[in-house]
Image (cartoon, rainbow, N blue to C red; front, side, top):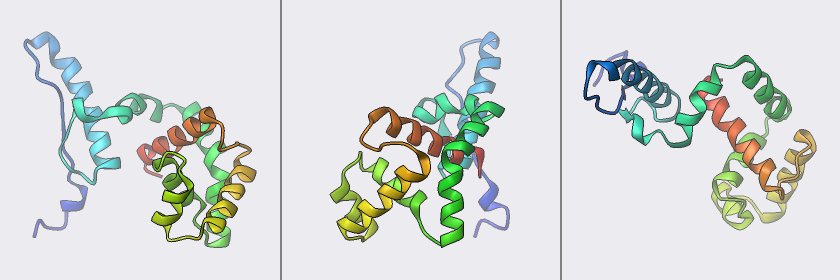
Length: 152
């Protein structure tokens, strides 16, 4: 048993530094890795060099304009899910994680392909974004990742 504070424990580690002049960079890297450890990795130790796309997004997560854009893009889906006890956000996340593969998404979500198609049409209607467009899929994926980093 790790105790009552275990769920809040997180570790972020910078790349090694060779001199004192590298310490400010290392502190920034460790903070970035820590944010990702908390938001996306359940507190697991995270090395800066392992942060991937999240490492690029951490600076955007603190931007008020980024927050507004994420709210504009995902807000309608979140409101719909809350009002209808549905799971459009999970459907979208799974669809994007499966690289737009409807069969794999339906299987992973335990849905009939027609049910998945219906949900994806609702996502398109609510966001105003065509999921066939790769740029729209990228924007939606970035918004989902930023929402996770925002802790909302």
